[in-house]
Length: 435
Image 1 (cartoon, rainbow, N blue to C red):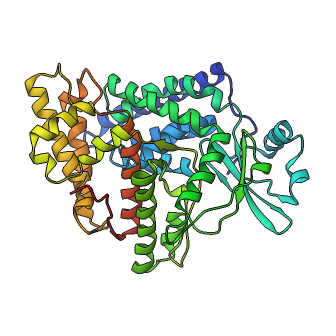
Image 2: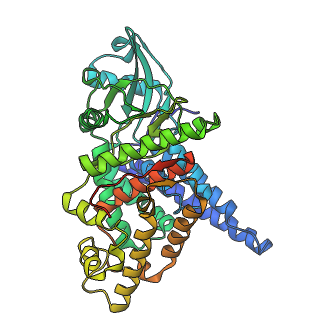
Image 3: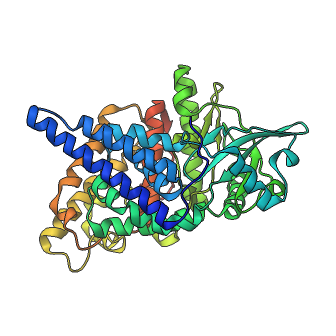
């Protein structure tokens, strides 16, 4: 993979990249319309592939928040055509890496040493490269480390990048502008946190300490003395990412053990700690043939407010959706419906959210749930497709749902997809107070 010797840092450079990408997308549409003239049955597949390749190519060179948004879109598989999913998923752990001279420059700035002065060995080539930073392998004495280095200019470009990526996101999300702005506001706050490696180091050490008792999971140890505001050093974990792991054809027992570890890890964070590793994409998990699971990267952590938690998880109750007297105040409190909605709008939104909560809460309604169930996931995708076409949502004057739900929903959807890919059956524990 070609290394990047420079990342565009200034607003002008980054804006120019987006303008160039927009021009490429425009040309792709012209080609598509040309194909339609010759063949009226021509599909959008080639258009989607061309656009996905061009957009991802530009975002991977820009790094930072623009690429992170693409990565998030890849997790929400129901939002994008397959061509975008495949391209954007690469941003999870295989983006073009930064060249070694820029890595050395970062070390000299924060440690006044080169990597080879700090460690016995240090890989010149990145082992992993994603949206915010890249990982190098290092050794010192008898230990092997993973050293994560943040790309230059990422933190400073978040706000301007999100404004630039907005037109692409509007088209890809098929959302109205009010909904997208609500979404982007929460995303911007989380991305700013992700660039704060001091905060990530503290959260990594805290959450791993408070979840280390969970069976079949393991974490790296973190090293503050080899870390800074732009570098984090931790133990090197052996294991395979999901795609490579599945190629080994693990047994159903191993799949179930890893799936159960995933479920238990998220259950404990959400319901006991009220803060959660909110970036459940495959690049953050290392799987082993013995059925154990390594968990890394606590840059994106969602702290769940108590009042939101109480309301949100009451929706999981099977009985609540049949009791409007109890349900409606919760939907108002979570901003699913508003006082100035028309009676028609209220009925549409209430009926829709009843359907959504029953569907997404279904795994909680059983003692165990088989996530290999294709029919269940097809129901989710079909519901999402219907929602994207409903004029009441597209024309809504308000965003539908609390901003706190964005990352909680994303976490559960990411977890469900991981379990589906594993084809795992898990015991779906839930708080005692949920009926």
